Amino acid sequence: MNILTTTKQIAIIAVVLLLFTAQRGSSLTLAKASVEELTTESTLIIKGVVHSTESQWEDANHRAINTYVTVDVSRYIKGAGESQIVFKQKGGQIGDTSDIISGTPYFRKGDEVLLFLVESNGVYEIHSFALGCFRIFTDTKFNEQVINDLRNVDVIDPATGKRVSPQDAMKPFSLDAFIGEVKSHVSSK
Image (cartoon, rainbow, N blue to C red):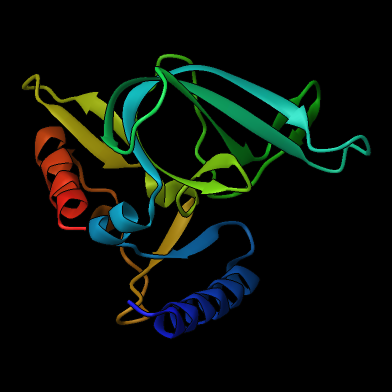
């Protein structure tokens, strides 16, 4: 993909986001991304368990809050690194002050996750807010599943410009099959 094509796609996505955010106001609207796009555009892809979260003021003027999430990495699917990774996301809570950013996933200690992370200015962040965050759970038949939790996100299909239904946006997948698909995109790079 050349830079001009990428720039055009980013511009189109930005316009769509602005239009839908202005109309809906309360939720974030994102263009749907394929597993291949998430994989090729991510610096790291990890499977792990949330160890801790810590919210901090962004600056001395207390204008915004950022939350730093530490994950105990059980597996690197793309890239390599330490046994723990810390990533930053916008928003959080300090005392009675909340800075809620629609579309930003909420993490608790013990959450098992599969994350697509991008590096920005030396700090890792989740790829495309919630689009790069997958929750891992065990279904009633004791099979590990993965689901993209998009409850606070409106997803738009970039090919049609239409909203993706919540049922289609939040389908669980076999964890092993999902990781297999991700690895196929990593190896084809």
